[in-house]
Amino acid sequence: MGIQSIRIQNFKSIKDSGDIELGQVNVLIGANGVGKSNFIGFFKFLNQIYNRNLQLYVAQNGRADNFLFFGRKISTRIKGKITFDNGYQNEYDFTLVPDQGNSLIFSEERSNTSEGSLDINTPGASESQLKNNTWFRSKFLRRGLESLKLFHFHDTGFNSRMKQPSNIRDYASLQEDGGNIAAFLYRLQESNPDVLQMIVKVIQSVAPFFDNFYLAPDEINADHCLVSKT
Image (cartoon, rainbow, N blue to C red; front, side):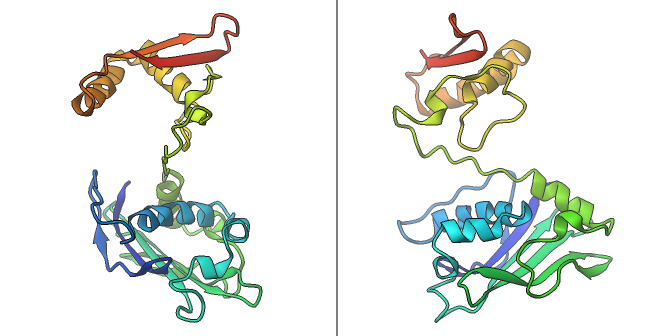
C-alpha cells in the first residue's frame, strides 16, 4: 500500500505544497534552496510522529521555530495530509501547533476514508495516538506508515556506518543509514543472486567502471561481513 498523494503546509521552507501525486518512482529536480531536502525531511518528521518520538525529535532539532515556516511569528501550525492508494482513500491528516514551551502539540489528528472520518487524538496531546487507535480502518494507516523508511546515505566518508563491517545476521531489513548494507547484500548474494545482479547492473548504468561487489564473512570474526567493490 503506497502513498498516493501528500500535502504539506508550513513545514520549514514549504508554505503549501498543494496535493502532490506520487508514483512508484519520483525524482526531485530543482535549484539549491527550493525545498527538496525539506520535502524529503518531512517523511522523517512523519516517521517520528508515528513512532511517538515527536517531542524528543523537536527538542533535539531546534524546537518549534525550526520546523514552522519562518517560525511562529509567521506560521501558526503545521499540517500534513497523506493519502494511501488502497481503494478506500485511507488518509492520515494531522495539525500541529506550537505551545508555550516552543514545542509542537496536536490540535488535530484524524483518520479519513471514503466511508467517513474519525478523530484519533485530543487537542493538546503531545504524541500521536494512531498506534493505539482501534478503528478498523486505522490499521491500514498503520501498515502504510510502518512501511515508510527514509534511506539517506549522505555520509560516505571513511568512518561512515555503511563502510564498516556489519553483523552477518543483521539482514532482515536495510537500515536507514546503510549500517548493515554489507550483511544485507551478502544475504542477497547467498539467497537471491539474481536480485543482487540487478543492483549491480543499475550501478553500472551510472558508473560503467564498477564491476561487482566482493562480499564475504570476516576471516577472523565470522559474525561480521565485509563488503568491497571491484
